[in-house]
Length: 380
Length: 232
Ligand SMILES: Nc1ncnc2c1ncn2[C@@H]1O[C@H](COP(=O)(O)OP(=O)(O)O)[C@@H](O)[C@H]1O
Ligand SMILES: [Mg+2]
Image 1 (spheres, rainbow over the protein chains, first blue to last red):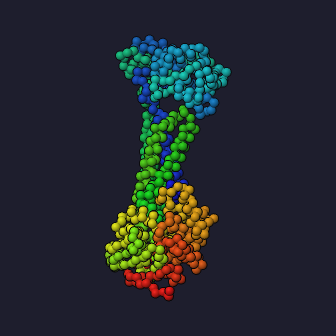
Image 2: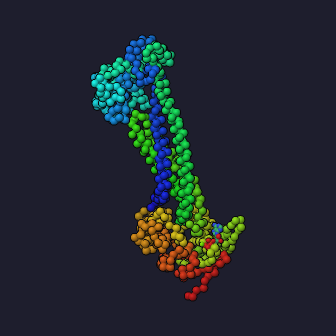
Image 3: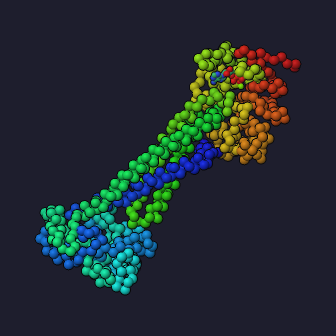
């Protein structure tokens, strides 16, 4: 027996009540963990460039543009370099392991956005060796445990080969690191020629052009110029900076994030009130025992610690379960969803668990400390 | 401590309560001496202040005025924290309704007071085993209070009261809730603790049979004591 064992035994006196309390706490921290993981996982836009422009179809990102546009874009005097890519989305091995492959002209990609992606001449050379070679981003490689030289098969969601099969085989030729840790490297780079030559439909189209303006040229003015070129064609374009594009995409999430934050906040406050209320009840029920402990000579401070330890225990067990469930959710959801349970989130959640545990226990503990013991001999 | 001083001395003790704005006096200038090794039974009508006196002796309640000394400690001058720690080291308390903690088994209940002492887990276990043996409960260490008879529970209560080897035992109606046979067992045990282990015992009781186990009987009447005359 120790005092902490006594706190544990006290905690399990009303098992149902304790279990319900723990579930309350676990659910709250699951919500918290998921929200924070989601926000942490969608922070790609800060690293995105203002200078790189992307050209996609006005009809939407998934609508193809003819590769023939390349010549007209290149001939614009304000454009320095142009690249292009076809996005091949699919999965590897299991359907929720979603992978995105950008089929591109490696040399052009290098010229437009090489430094940002962490592409080096050595990597580009390695990719050049054979048509089915692939460069994999660090985040994607780590998530799958892939190494250089490994062969993988991406099963495409849409793009089939001429034989009707949607399996695309690649050999990993290198891994690119990204300029900084906040660069999105959860994708792979393949040869446009390989994908374009084999695919059944939409040959000679691309998902997007990407270009870098000449020095001193305003990216937004250039964007207007380019969209004007194709305004009257069959497939008009929409040109945006990479940052604008990502931010527009993120903003939908940001608002959701705020709502979820409000819900989490409300859940926390409600939870806190429920638990304080329950603990006050529990301590009142225990007046008799607290009186006994005091008559035995247990100090007021110890009694207070005993009650505090009990709430803290409820929060630590509940919070731990909540965070474990969050971890499970991030694993099950797969990395493509973008849930990232960072050590920072865990540290913050632990701090909140601890502070709430203390705050919730404070009032009942204070009450317990003040419970008079004169009545100890008289009633029970 | 000098040998000429009685172990417990109460001088000019005053104690009253306010009930609904009206002050009632329970003790007004009480004097009492109890020598070391005594076994005193306190009797008296209900409401005469027996429990109030025990509470003050235990340092749970405070006198309004007067002096209350036990050994070298003047309880009337000590703060609540000091009295709690004094209690932990110097006295055991036996309650009418046993006051065992229901979620702890017999051994754990008995071990509780030892948690306040600098003892190893092994030392605590040894002591618990020894006192449970002494009160005739060896083999029942793991039983919970709800599975025990009143007599057994009270023996756990006595074991808890003596486990830290205090010199003084306070008992408030220790047999008030027991049948004759269990009551006699408990009283035998108290007599043993007094005669063989030298504990000073103050026991409040209604039961004249119980009072016979004591060395002397004090009747509390109108806030003062009258000692019972006994055939030697
Ligand atoms: N906390 C209290 N508040 C007010 N009155 C009390 C309190 N404790 C005891 N009393 C009163 O003091 C008197 C003595 O009580 P008590 O010591 O319990 O008597 P006994 O144990 O001899 O039956 C009673 O009249 C009781 O009502
Ligand atoms: Mg009484």
